[in-house]
Length: 161
Image 1 (tube, rainbow, N blue to C red):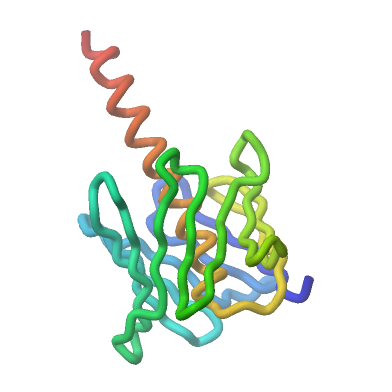
Image 2: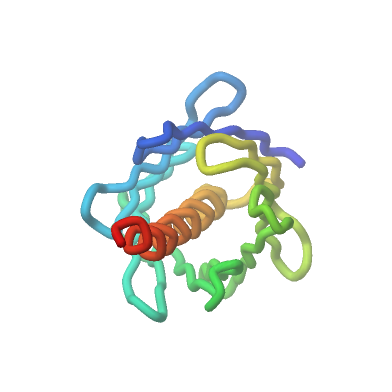
């Protein structure tokens, strides 16, 4: 695989920093109190704008050209997602039951492998558009946030009673 990157995110941080060796090459930054995330990688800037409640979708917008370049749709059980771009479709799936490995495939061929947790990890992949690499991190973070929200909704009432 040609692309080798890593990422780090502090425990309470809303920013995921992306590195090539020890040089920062991009980031994903969640905006407070909104359903938007700004990302940049390899000089390209994108906005991930999420909408919906039961049928959640995320539009991927090129910030510089103000054009929607893709859309992410999520599987019902939040273990799969599809990234659509023009006539191309990329599939995002977890590789293991611990949700510490995931990948992006196209027509059954693995394009990008991710390994990590919510705070750090690495990316190995073939050359793909920057928004596809960013989408892989964005989707994983989105699912981690949903899992935390569900746990809080379940355990806070139990603790308070």
